[in-house]
Image 1 (spheres, rainbow, N blue to C red):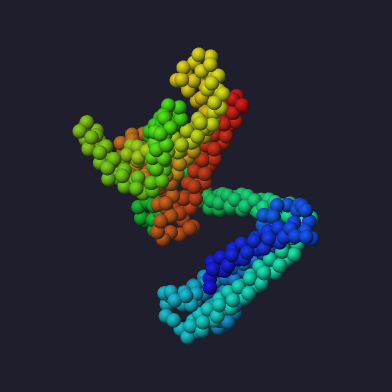
Image 2: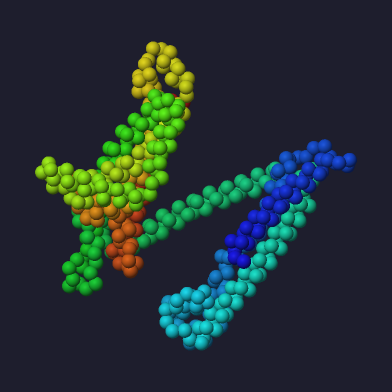
Length: 462
């Protein structure tokens, strides 16, 4: 039995508790000695019994699993010989890792000694004992909770209030987890970025025109100083995003207007899902399409016109990325346009405006907040895209406005810096966190601008 099976058993017990609680409440209103009314619907009594059965048991199981590894590790370390326990923390961690791998049947880093085999057997026994104890404790707690919840069911019991209170606190907990997760991500990136700016001046990072993060091991090697100017990366990012928006915004917006205002119901029924299929295609497929089809097509046709076109160009990546982003703008804009009240259309047509004038002067201004929000969402999606850029635009950090040349983006460089065996105390690796922080701030600014636009124009049309 595994923890997954134990959770499934708990869910089954919760379903049983729901049925028992609901049936008990139904019996209370039936029969010769039954009461006439219940405070809550029978389903609330079922949910209340299920909550008593499952919630405490799941919390105990979560805490048990969270603390189990640390406790077992300490017990295994305490049983090791004194010479092993006296090792430095890093070496001791490797020994424990080998013991765990040996107990799980995986490959260890060195030779297996008799002490390691004994420790692995001890580790395996502790895990088995811990799991058996968790099964007994969790299932006993679940059955006890089911009994308590079932006994609390009565005609005057406010089951609905209790269930809604539990749901409210669960929602508060989920919101708190989301907030703290976001805060943790920001702080982790911020602290590593501060370490980077202690090695590289922030002015050089923000305004430097050269990007070459390769750091040599010895001072006499080429590139030992490195160059961390971020301007070429953001120039490439904005260039590709601009090309993508020039493709996606007109096509996406016009298709949304046509589907919502001009297309028939039958055409719309199959055209909109077909258009949204583009959003479900993996980005690596778009990358292959850009690298194998679009980029060679642009290069060959550019050569016919006498243009110097690179095999990997910003134009190829931007065109394919624009195709990928079309569903984001089209679907969101279509939903926003359909949400405009029909009374506004009828009023415009009633005073003599044509259909096209109604679309241009009434519907689009009314739907402008949602359209702008969808466009800014698409911009954020374009800025964060990696796979298409790697395969179609290359890795060269060129400071150029020529879309026919090879460029790179911030996200591509973040991936490049963190690939392979890297030391997390070198400027090369820490530069990835600084890039991530700067990209986060730019995305935050875009979201603030979107909220400002939505609030400004929403007040004018409500």
